[in-house]
Image 1 (cartoon, rainbow, N blue to C red):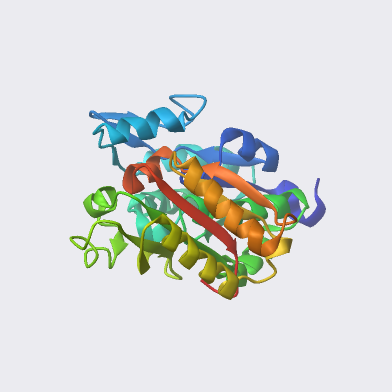
Image 2: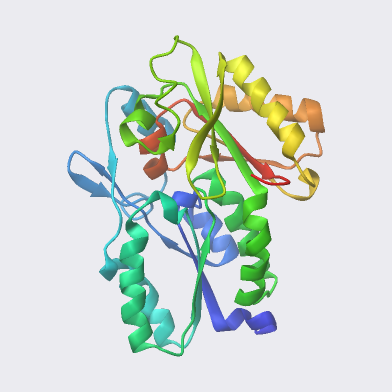
Amino acid sequence: MSKGGYAMYVIFTDTDTDITPEKAAEYGYHLISMPYTVNGKDVFPYVDFDKFDSKAFYSSLRKGLMPKTSGLSPETYYEAFAPFFKEGKDILYAHFSAAMSGTFAAMNIALERLKEEYPERKFYSLDTKGITIGSYNIVCEVGQMYKDGKSAEEIMKWAETEVDKFATYFFVEDLSFFRRSGRVSGISAIMGNLIGIRPIITMNSEGKMASCDKARGRKQVIAKIMNVVEELQEDIYSHKVILAHSDYEDAAKELENALRAKFGEKLDIEYVDINPTAGSHCGPNGVGVNFHAKHR
């Protein structure tokens, strides 16, 4: 498997991209678990449990559980990467948005140490500028290129133009989780408005979440998202369309029906559960779509 330099490097991603261990194994990813904290205890997805029970997790949030999230230590990153550098392999890490977490400062500390110990090794940081489905589609495409024997340099070249062509739009029914996390710009202006107003949230080209529109009621918000998909989509049939939800399957199905009514049955749609670390910020009853677009 030396075609394209495949055997000369390994690929990493993290659980904040919605990649499960099964999906990671399909592409050959090494998976970094991003923790969340419940009642003072850190929980590491797919380390402390084998399967993510999304219904149970989001049900607990509805009942008042308020998880927190935190980054990893430099030592954790060092221990993840060092064995591969020691084997003489480079690393390509397709990760969730660096603009959304301080954990990458810790990663950079680890990398400085690794550069001193293994100066000949290369580390490629591929920022998906997203989280959950905002990363998932990109990570899957990168994984397929890796399987196809593309070199790390070829993948990074692809990312220069393609990362910003995967657009994400989503909404949540309860804004209190986003308000508490403070991770969505522009959402404060919507808070306090009439009941039933839902912001439409996107991942911008800086890798940050921002409120880009608002609508009253679920039907109107889905209609507005559909308008955006129709306007922005580019070569939509050649890429997967990803639907994700935080235990809100009926709304996700409504969005799928709207997509199929517009684009037909040949549209390749895949469902994923919003991972618990990201879900700690968005809360239950959220739905999003990611698709290939002209731009974000």
